[in-house]
Amino acid sequence: MSVSDGALRLTADREPTRGSDGKDYEYRSGMVTTGPANSDDNVGKVSWTYGTVEARVRVPAGRGLWPALWMLPLDRESTPEIDIMEVIGQDPGRMMMHFHPRDRDDDSPSKDYRLTGETLADGWHTVRLDWQPERLTWSLDGKQVWHLTGSQVPDEPMYLVLNLAVGGIYPGPPDETTKFPATFEIDRIRITKNELK
View 1: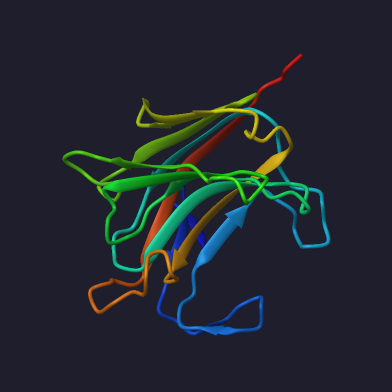
View 2 (view 1 turned 120 degrees about the horizontal axis):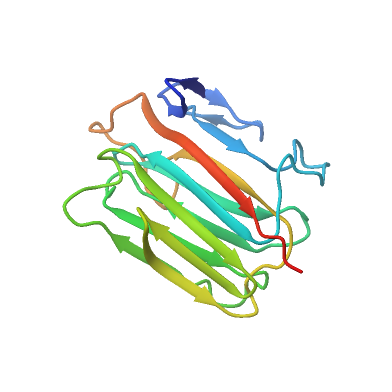
């Protein structure tokens, strides 16, 4: 992870690394969160209930790369998750959005949005989530691309996570065509809290 030319850069490299879980991994990458500093802490650096998250990003392309921008509840006993943006590197023209409700036995709706004529790796793009009581609205470059309504929309403090994962079941492993180092760039993030009366 580094900051240069005004942008945060989460960089993945083919470098053996021991994870916080004590396991050895082939790759090293980065994550930034506004949540608790450790698993025993229930105080986030920045958490909120309702508002907007807007990020200007450029994602890397390459098989096995998995940049994401998502939200988790501050209460570790709770389980909803809002995936604002996920991209698998072998298909950077597709932005994936998911909502995992508190009750994981319920359906987890999702939406794929395909860009036309370009990809999220081609220059800077602005992703946005508007979070209101019983309503979530996702936008890309000022265009609404999905919305979700209902009582399962979280009504509790949540925090933000940005990461660049490598491999796993979802994107699969990198291959010989994947170029390292690979970088997920974040030019800015703006969080606006709604003050509901």
